Amino acid sequence: MKYIVQMMLAALASIAIAVPAYAWDFGVSGSASADFYMKSSTAAKDNSSSDSADSISVTTMGDSSGGVTISSSNTDGDTSVDFSLALGEYYDSFTETYSMSGSTKVGDWTGSASGSITNTQAWAEDTDDGDDVDAPGGSAGSAQVSLTDGTITYKLGAASHLSGATKGWTNINNVVSTARAGAAVGSFEGFSVGYAVDDATSLTFAYQNDSAVTILGNQGTTTSASTYFACSGSNAGGTSCEAITDSDASSSNSKYDTTAYGINVATTAGGADVTFTYGTGSMAVKKANDISTDEPGGAVTMSTYGLGVSFAAGDVTPWLNYSNEDNNYNDNSSASDNDIKFSITEMEFGVDLGMVEDWSISVGYGSYKTDKTSGASSKSGSSEDTKFEIGALTSVGGVSIDLSFGTLLSSKSSDESLSDSGTFDDGEKLTKYGVKLSYTF
Image (cartoon, rainbow, N blue to C red; front, side, top):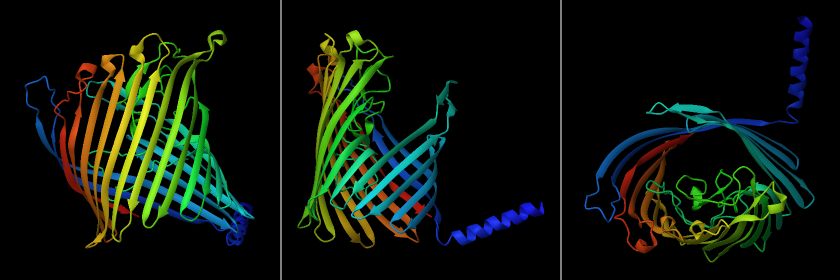
C-alpha cells in the first residue's frame, strides 16, 4: 500500500512539472431562459364553408435549460487544440456532443480540422391513447479539414460551404414564424474553394458528388428510399412536406446519386454589405441491385439563389433579402400525376436600430409564397404567408431581456386543385407578444 501511495505521489509530481509547459485551460458554461407570452389566433376557414372561424387567446409561461458545456483549450506555439463536451436535451431525450478542433501554422499555410460526435439516448413516451412512441436514439458524427494561406482556402468534409445570403433580423425572436428568406443551402459533405479578392470581396465555389444525401444539404428524399419530398428551407426533412412516391425504385435497394455545385460572392463598399449565393443540383434514383435494369428510376432537380443587402448608416441599418427556389420531381413513370414542380419565392425587408435608450431594436417584414403544379390536382396549389415582427433587446445585471411582438398578417392556401389555384382560404390569423429572459453563466 505504501508503494502504491509513493507511485501516486510521483505521478502527481510529474504532472505538476509538465503542466506549465503543456497547460490546458478548462471552463464550464451554461445557460437558462424563461418566457411569458400572450397569443391570439383565428383558425383558417375554407371558402366553401359558411361557418365562422374560432378565435382563441392563450397565455403561456415556459422555461428552458440551454444545457452545460465543458470546454478545454491548449496552445503550443503555432498549434492550438480545443475540446468541448456539451450536455443537453432533445425532445425529452438526453444528448451529449463531443467536439474537437485544432490548427497548425507552417510557413504561410495553416491547416485545421474539426469534428463532432453526438450521442442521443433512446426514449419512449406514453400517448393519451395508450400507445407508446419510441425514438431509437444513436450516434452521428461529422468532420471537415481545411487549408488556407489567408488568400485561398480549401475545405473538404461536412460544412456549411455556402451561406444563405441572409441579412437583418438581428434582434427578432421569431415569435409567429421561423420562415426566413435565403438560398436553399445547408451543411453538406462536399469540397469548396474560397478566394479573398481583396479586403472587401470574397468568392467561394462549392462542389458536391455523393450518394444518398440531399442536394446542397437541403432538398432530396425522405428516409424511405422510394419517396421524394418537396419542401423549403428548414423544413427540408419535415413532416409538412409533400411526398411523392417513385413507382420504379424499390424501397429496399434503390440508391441515390447526388451532384450539385454553388457559388457565393460577398462584398462591402461604402457602407453597403452585399451577399449573393447560387446553387443547383440533381439527384438520380437508380435500382442498385439489378445490373440489367440499372437505369434511372426518377430524378429530383433543384436550383436556388439568394440575395442579401444591408447598408450601415450610423446607428440605422436597413436590409433586404430576396430568394427563389425551383424544384422538379419526376418518377420516370408513365403517370404524369407523380411529376411535380415546386417553386418558392421569399422577400424580406426591415431595419436594425442601434442603441435607443440602451435597447437594440429590429423591425422586419416577410413574404413567402409557394406554388405547386402537377398533372394530379391533389398535388397542386399555392400558399402565401406574410409576417411583421418587432424585437427589442437589452441587458440588466447580466440578464438578457428580449421583448417581442409579431403578427401573421396573412397565412392562406388554395384548395389543392388546379381549377381552384386562385381561390384562397380565409387564412389563419395570429398575433403573439411577450418577454423572454435569459442568462449565460
